[in-house]
Length: 284
Image (tube, rainbow, N blue to C red; front, side, top):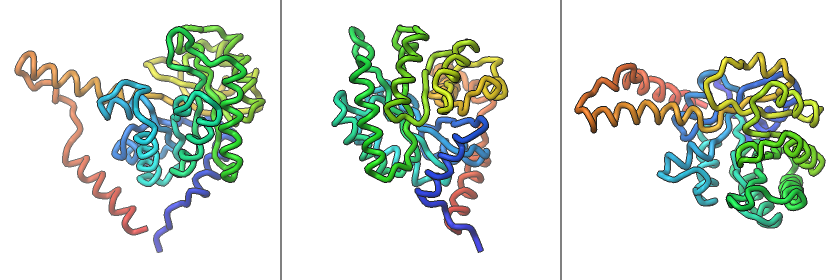
């Protein structure tokens, strides 16, 4: 008898357990196909990428409307059997009440976790002041708790991504978000080992997410040794796919050559993979 598909509650419980010990990779698909392929490789959980999804819709990162993002979350959750964490950007609202409403809607898609950034999107004032940022995390925590409390909340300090690479400020914000109810802390943009170790120590025992979005000799084992609990890649996988597409397309447009197709995935193999993936889901 074939196993039944895991329930939303199962996925959320599994996601919580992944954060209890060890170090795991949380890769970032941008559509159903990439999500199902990543699942087939044995990854225990996935996370959406705001940039990868936005580019697939012909938009720059951060410009996809809330309704589109919510539909995307529902689609990825329904298409996979592993927990999905949402790159939920800034909560699609500036005020705490608006963040709470957005989080409530995100929980309804079946995600196992979601992150809330403290960036404003405004160049003149790129980060919310700390009191506002904390209130926004507290509002997200409240929405999760009212819905049952089983969705993992990630608090993000965007200092290094918005031109304020101040480790002390980053740590102060992360500690405040932890105290406001964030289950996991995330400072995208930190790269140096001493920065990573400092962040892990500052928010312990709460888990830390590390972003690795560029080629580096730094490994998962290195991250684990520093106490990182999970590693995500943001839009890096989507950018790799775009790089191959752009190279081949430009070669055709500019040179009339088709050599860019060298190394392309086999259509036969892709058809076989997705045929088998659909069949496995149908028998459950």
